[in-house]
Every structure is written in structure tokens, then in C-alpha cells.
Image 1: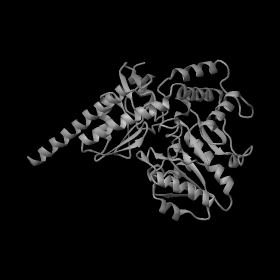
Image 2: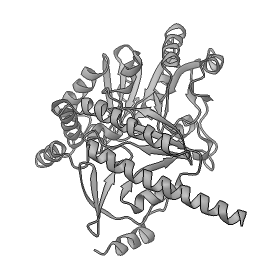
Image 3: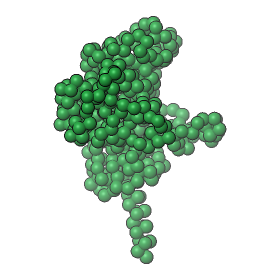
Length: 405
């Protein structure tokens, strides 16, 4: 089909709640994707980090093919082997606990909200979250999200959520009341501009939760599965949450979410208190088990550390060369470049040069290449950014000359 016909189908029949560019993608492999005209792109933001081990990783593809020929779906009233094995694998890499499977990060966060409310009600039901956070698009998740723009038009919002500034322990401590049952945060705010939690802050939050018997929920939907150089980001801080939520890269490209809760609180969700039809299906679990296998056998976390170090080296070189780069921040293969200008034009110029990245918060370029990324691919991405920054500088200078004349 002609790519213009595909776009027309969207225009005619698909609800337009996304900002889309006229790019029709047909296939992907590793860090590359190809459009309907056969043009190749370097993807440094693969599916909002969903394809964390690369597009169409052979282990994931083979696992899905095998499972699709045996059993696609099983009601959660019954058992199937791969869900048990996947739960065991997640716990092996995290902390002693149990897992609830769902389909997305928002659903995983909803499960976390219900878990802590079930524990705390009726007297303790408030959840503290962070400004600039992002936790999903359901009504409760969007209320927990510390960004008003995602909440506008959906009032009245559910009660019981309080926002405080990120990385400000004194503000957090002041917000705690006898009603506080949980504190929820991302160890690195992705949608908030790739803002990394301070080590002392994380340690203080963990102590506060312990002392006040508050449940610490870490949203690792974007930071999990090796992204930051550890299987889960919280391990970089030397702490352990009580609840962790996962999705995005968990399925290697296939939709799956999970909420992990410590054993002493997990069993509060008894039969009938929470459920999902599709969560933890044989197909999703097979894809996720293959994702873990790829990360472990191919030493992809080690590559995230090495390639991540190289990425930040190259990005900091860009910062020294271009005054429009205000700050480079992040961890592992999760990088943000805060600019002194709007990032929309930069994003669009990168797209023209066949580099896919993301712009968030208006002026933060977000780069999250797959864990299989190579140095030569990082070099190419940095080269394109360098070209685009230089072009932007020339445009600004031309405008200034015009004003002076």
C-alpha cells in the first residue's frame, strides 16, 4: 500500500490523540527501522523505550513464534508455566516478593495504588508523588502525574494524591501526614526531562518510609530492564523499594506490565480485589522471558554501561562545542540534553537526517537507544546532532544579522 493511503486511513478512522509525523514504518532490526519507501533510520528512541533490546530481537521473535503455535491466551483462573517462570525471574533480579501481571505501565501503577490503598484504608489513603513525574494516562495515574497539562479537561480527578518537588527532601518530609500511606517516584524522571534522583535524597526517602511505615513505590516503567546499567535502576542507589512497577522494555517489544510487591504486603490483594483479562498471557510471558534471556546471555547490561559511558562522553563534547546545550544528564543509556532553546526544530531536523529521538518538556532532547547499540551508531547520532546544532546556530546568527541591518 502507498504510504499516503496508510496515513489517510489514520486520518479517516483512527482517533487523533497523538502528535504524529508523516512517517510510515514497515520493519525494524536492532537499532534501525525502515519506512514504507525503504529509507533507513537510526532509532535512538525505540518505541518510547519499549524495544529496549532492539527491534525484533531474534530471541523474542522466536519465542513468540513458538508460543503462538501452542497457546495464545489463558484465563487467569488457570495456571500456565511461563507466568510462574517469569514471576520467578523478576523476583530473582529484584527483591523477595510477588508479581501481578498486566498490560502496561499505567495498569501496573493502578495496581500499586489499589494495593497501598487496601493496606491503608480507611485512615491512611494519601499517596505523595513528585512534580514533573509521569505515571500514565488512566484517571488515577494521570492524577498521580505531577504535570497539570495531562490533567486538564479531565476533572474532577480522584482524590488522595499530593505532589511535591522532586529531589527536595524537606518538602517531602513536610508533606507527610498521618494519612500518608505511600510515596511514589521515578528514580529518573523520563517524561519530566531525564532528571535523576540524588543519591542522598533517595537514601533519605528510604529512611523516611521505614521510620514512618510508609510504602515506597518506585515507577521503573522506563528505567527498568538494564536501561541504566543495572537490571533495575533502584540498584544504582543502594536502596530497595517496597513496590516496583514495570512495563515498556519488559516484553522486548511485546506489551506487558508488572507490579512487584514485597511478600509481607503482596497478599493483601486477595481473589476478587484486583484482576485483568489479558495480563500475563502465555504470549506476553514468552516474550518477556526471551527478553531476560537476551539481556543475560548477551551481556547487554554490561553493554549499557560501556556504551552509556561512551554516549555521555560524546554528548558532553557536544555541550562544550554548542552553547545551546545547557546540561547533559542521565544514566546508562538514558540521556537528556537540556537546551537553551525550544527543541522542536532540532527534533524535526534530526528526523530529516534519519535520526529518531524525542523532545520532552519543550527543550529536553531524550536519547534512549537500545541496549544493543554500538559505538559507531552513537558516533553517527552525535554527528547528526552536531550538524543540526550548527545549523541552528547559523539560523540564529542570520536572524541577528537581519535585525542589525
